[in-house]
Structure formats: structure tokens, C-alpha cells
Image (cartoon, rainbow, N blue to C red; front, side):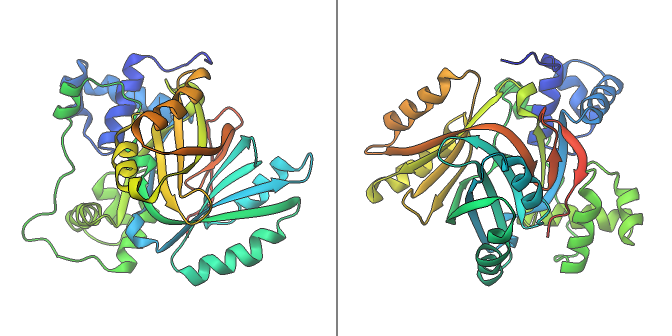
Amino acid sequence: MQETPLDDLDLQIIHALQLEPRVAWTALAPILGTDAVTLSRRWERISGAGTAWLSAVRGSGEMAAAALVEFSCEPGRVLDVAHEAAQLPEIYSIDVTAGGRDLIATVVSRTDGALADLLLGRLGRVPGVRSVRTDIVTDVVRLGSDWTVQALTPAQQDRIPAPRPPRAGAAKSVTADLAGALRRALEPNARLPFRELGEQVGVSAQRASDAVALLRRSGRLVLRTDVAAPFSSWPIAAWYFLQVPSAELGAARRELATMPAVQYAAMASGASNMIVAAGARRKDEVVRTEMEFARRIPGVRVQDRSMVLRVHKHLGRLLEPSGRASGAVVPLP
């Protein structure tokens, strides 16, 4: 494992922010046994180094179509293709992988037609692409925002305050224009104070607070905290392409949603009807994860797997070769 610049308290802060990205430092301090000033300074150091970051993205219900796209590239052109493909806003994330594909990209669009236009047109014209294989996502079993670094005890997790709900007298809906403006304003800093957020989008602080609360509760807005994998306690990641018997799909959904290593899981339309991304603390755990699939899911076959060499783009953010956020963002559609 690569030496980590994150100590136990750093990882606890990240875990807490994964549970509630806008938790107040004053509320978190007694849970972690320190003071609010220390927590604020720690997070400023962590986020300033690009080791962990906050994102504001549309909820899965806001985006009607998604696919996982595998790229095979011409020799020596893998990073060139990753750079060009990363400029497309519909490509949320890109992993550089070893195995049967060079890149795995998560592609999201508002409509099936728009997704088809992208898959049939622009992707194939990226210079250096030898071939493209697409699996349409039919259902998401687990999102990356559901996964944590698992640094807090269960008792500490139970004490993390839940997001504040909208006031009883608040507006019951949020227009698409306001929702988009709030998301764009929160994209670079999901902890932006509501007073500043309201000023940016032209509403009162109270209206901004209520609107964000309503959007989060309805699933239209997701705030999440991510960490550069090489510097976390889970530095290794791999993609698994599973074939699950139809009669066991329900059991597979339940099991994958509870496996600590699983970071993302989706049902798909291709030869592999379940595609999973999972983290590992050591390389030998990559194989142990396959054994865990077999133990938990009757009849499952791991048809293929690819280890992640590098994350090039994550939810619109371009990452450095070290895995840290570079500061460059391709705005999401």
C-alpha cells in the first residue's frame, strides 16, 4: 500500500463528510473528540491538497439514461483518449484499467435518445479509439455516494446529524432553473454557506436552505465526499463483470448493497448482467472479492475483471496521476 498522508482523524473527518457533507464542525467536534477549529483546518488542508473533495451532482432520478462504456485504444494512445473523452460533459467518470479494456467510462444523459447520439456519434470519433463496447445500465444497485472509508465506529456514525429537512412552511417544490443554479453554485464547494449560496443564485439564505433541503430529500440533488483512492485505506479498485442467474438477481442486489468493498453496482443489458466496482486494501483482496461474490450469490460467474490503474476523471473532476483532484472541472450537463 502506498504511504498515506491521511491519519486516523483525517479519515474520520472524511467518513463523517461522506455521511453528511454539510455537517457543522461544531456538531462534529464532540463526536470526534476534538474542537471545531481543528476540524476546519484539517479539512482545509485535505481539500486544498486535492486528497478529498466535495461534489454536487444530479440525483439518479434526474438522469434517465446511463451506460458503462469500455474503450480499447491504439497502442500508446490510452491517456490521449482519456484526455479527449474527459472533455465530454456526459462522461462523468473515466478509469484507466488493466485487463480486457483500456478505459471504463460512466456515461449519463437525460434521455435515451441523447445517450444514443453520444454513443453512436461522438464517442467513436475520439482519436486513438480502436473499439467501443457499451453496456446500458438498466438499474443502479449501489452508488459511489453510498460507500465510505469506514473510519468511524457504529456509535460515532449514529451521532452524525442527519441533513436538516425543509421547514414546514417552506415551498413544496423547486423550479428546474433554481435547482440547476443551486447545483452549479455548490459544485465547487458543497459546504458553501447558505447566505453566500443565496447571493449567488439570487434568493434569500432561508430560501436557499429550504430549496437545498427539499432537493436532497427528493433525491434531485446529491452532495457527496470522495477521496483519492491511493491515499485512503482502500487504495486498490477493480471492476467485475458478473453473470447472475435470473432467479438470483434479487438476492444479488441485496448482497451487493451490503458488501463493504462494493463502491458501485449496476444491472446492465450486456452479456454481464451485473457490473460491480469494488475497493480493496491489498492486491490479494481483489481475488478474495470474487470468492465473496461466489459465497453470497448462488450460481454467479465472474466473466471478466479489470484492475484500475488510475482514475482520470471522477464526477466531472479531472484527477492527477497521483489520484488527487487537479482543480480542473468539466461541468456536468
